[in-house]
Length: 432
Ligand code: SF4
Image (tube, rainbow, N blue to C red; front, side, top):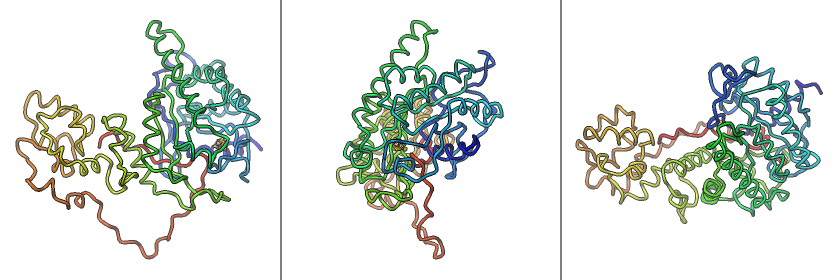
């Protein structure tokens, strides 16, 4: 198999893994440092996955051979997919060639597990080492790491990569035992904990000595598959919340499961709605930037997020006793809970109200979705009607109108090809 054929197999196998984004790393520019590549700047070409996401990294697997048999994965040992394997030098050459042609801004490298975790990790690290040391490549590198690999190899990966990640895969230990019995949630979290320590130590060192080597300056991320098991959104968000708090993760990515060919009977036959994944991203944003707690976003009676409303609006409708919020006197944490007010908008309101009372037309200038916010806010020129907030029909105002089904539309969407991990929708804007 030549390199082009390998690329078509291995890029296809990796293209849906969206647990990569070149944000949050340190700025490096070849024009200042010599060598090649930058983590910032223009001239970046993008590629698009079939579901419309824009990516600008060469996302590729070193190999799609794997000794593990995770049931949700197209590359599992028992799968009958076409297999291919790159050598480290081939990946290096492809990265440099694509970079020079301005196709990509960096590399996202993952791999199935061949022989054993250490052997696989050595190959992955060899690619990053060659790029950074031999070719002085300053572009973005994201490496997937293997929790069972030796700490020395993970440490080396962190020295070369901007971001490293280990996939948590499924939200509960029971889910892992059922679908990926070779994986162990505790071991995965243990490896994440060790990576966090290295990241923190490197940050501390750089405070005293700016020339100290960085360790994964873009932090670590993970990905969770949604809808492959009956785990609820509460389970998923609890797991994500725990990872942010205990392991200091930069991002958790949610990836809606898609049915795969010759799948095990333990897997569902249909994919969850993609909007579920979108709601999880929104809820994730609320956890990280809006001060919400995991248990506020779902309830014991409704352990899944409302698919019709964004989670902040759904929370506001469940907690109408907190509203209306006076935009000119309320503290920041309360303003952040108002539907339609994003973090930037809240900061703009806080600075504007030092000079004059904030009125409705100020919100229009700030491009606030006023219709959404109005029942929940109070300004000098607006106060919601006495019964508006108590009106049981208030929810209906925000629910999208029902759509007439097309008689001639396909009964079900065509199955998507599913490499591992499954596709994810782009994260939502933080402003909602
Ligand atoms: S998820 Fe990873 S470890 Fe599991 S079968 Fe797929 S490639 Fe192998």
